[in-house]
Image (cartoon, rainbow, N blue to C red; front, side):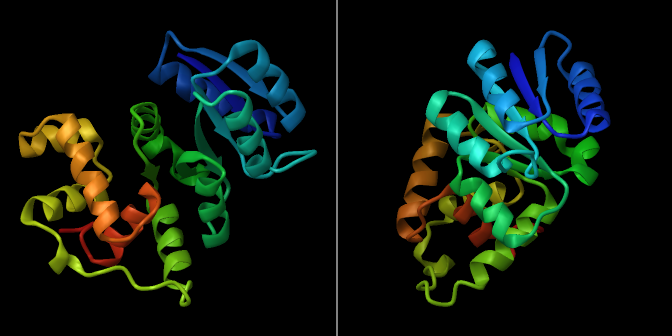
Length: 213
């Protein structure tokens, strides 16, 4: 696995690199302290995974994520940010992120976050999930999604496991389904609930109280 780490603080980069090296000994890891350096490193490395800070010199991590996705569509974006305010979390996913973890939660969440993002799943630490929930609830002009009554029993089970941060493989194993069937249920859920993004689906499930069931 090829990993790009972009953060303007050398000590933070050192800590992230050491953590990644312990988790994934065979990974090829490069670092950058600015957005320009990150783009140069990405052009050479073509990373499978890009771990980005929000606040970077020259341009923000959000803009960097957009440019990386344009240049290297296959790279998966995971933000390791200092905080998780509603606007930033929402914009991170709109910029193409698959995951969002605060640095204070990185030690507990990094392995699960990287594995989920690389598997094509969405990962939010608790702080980011709560921020996204606040962002969604503040959009009073948007129509309220339908309630759980529109879902089948199986779709509710899948939604509950999504709310708990389970990957497609984990959901398939828990419910004795194929991963393809789980993905089909996910698409049906988004269509029935009138949601456009997987992050919105996670937020909806949390608002319905399914995260802790």
